[in-house]
Length: 113
Length: 118
Image 1: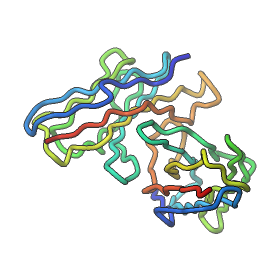
Image 2 (image 1 turned 30 degrees about the vertical axis):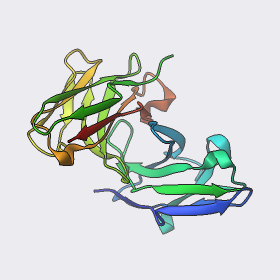
Image 3 (image 1 turned 90 degrees about the horizontal axis):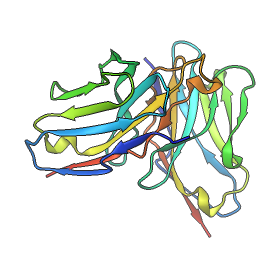
Image 4 (image 1 turned 45 degrees about the vertical axis):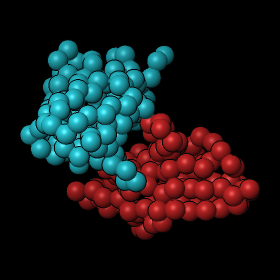
């Protein structure tokens, strides 16, 4: 069975600073990995995904993540935080397309002016 | 085109009442998923369909929970005799098949239904 651990339930950064949200996964086979963002009272929006191929993936809003098999990690980064990045971020894993996602508990990102 | 829609957006029920939550997936999407998100937690899988077939219902927390998708499009999640621990946001997601789109391994989420059981 797969699982996801997100280190840090709350991360606070200054506007313009680097954003780093950590995600480690457990999977018996090469996984598909996703980062979703959730704004208050809204559903989940896909930021980026890794399925196969290049291990550094770029997503929307300037975010990117790197799949590191040896570290079983898929950390999310953004070089410069913007106030609009304040939201809840979820890392998720699945074994293949069109199957249920297993989510981490989420990390709330706060951006300080 | 239109995204995934869910209704109602908010539902308040008295303990013991039955509720029905509706999900309208993106037109043509074959797969449909239901998740439960408790306050301050990540979404947890409940059940999913491929067309009208329910392929996995292992996440349903009790036999009070029932989901259907009779014509392979709209889905309804029904909760009988609601209890306070059922209070959560219920999220629906849909995804296309490989033949339909390169985004077949992505799930597109609706805004959710916030259920409060008093």
